[in-house]
Amino acid sequence: MPAPTRVTTRAVLTSVLAAAVAAAAYLGEDAVAAAAGVLVLLLAAGWASLLRLPAPGGATVVVGLAGLGGVAVAWATRGEPVLRHLPLVIAMALVLAFVAEMLRRGGRPRLVESVSGTVSGCVVAVSCAGWVAAGRTEAGASLVITAAVGLAVASAVSALPVARGWAGSLVGVAVGGGAAAGAATVAPGIDVVSGAVAGVVAGLVVAALQLLLARQPALASRRAVLAAVTAPVAVTGILVFVVGRLVLA
Image (tube, rainbow, N blue to C red):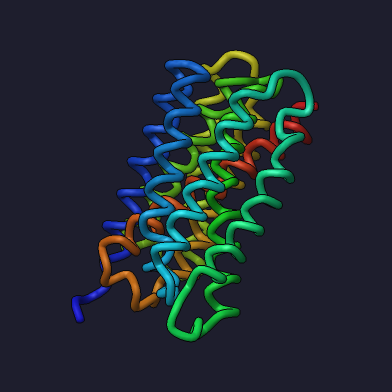
């Protein structure tokens, strides 16, 4: 079996995806929705491989539909609350997960693992809609840009030898928060404190997921790497929206 992809490579790829989200926010709301859709497709393509699920085809379809549905609903919803229809998307994803299992043949081995893995993938994929919703908060695109910059910098720092382990992860969190705060000084509609909070949250997500996946043998698969590098960006989306609603309210 090939060796798992190095953590430095995964960190750099995550940084590139975060930078792409920041660039999309600069272009406008539709571009952010498109970027979120791409994140969903990358995540769905590799999620089953990352978790080594027994029915990868069904899991890929269900995760992809759930994520794209969440992004589409967030983009199409006008007025507050932006994510008011997201529970319906998640509920339908749960139904699809069970339907996919019923369509399996061959005795349905590892049934519980397959269902739980698919459902967890749906939750992560739907989290991509948070980037669209974050763009509708008071700070708008500025919040998305500062958070994405913090995420990109925190991920890039985590690729350095000094940023290994728990202590090193804290360095990435601090630097990510500082980078987001710096971006907030030049972005309209957002203060330095809010930018720093968004950057710290993004840095914590990067640190947590990198430590979680550090020794995952499935990362020898290129498809699994797609999900591993996309997951931090996807999860950060919904958390940034929460920051926007709580800090900027």
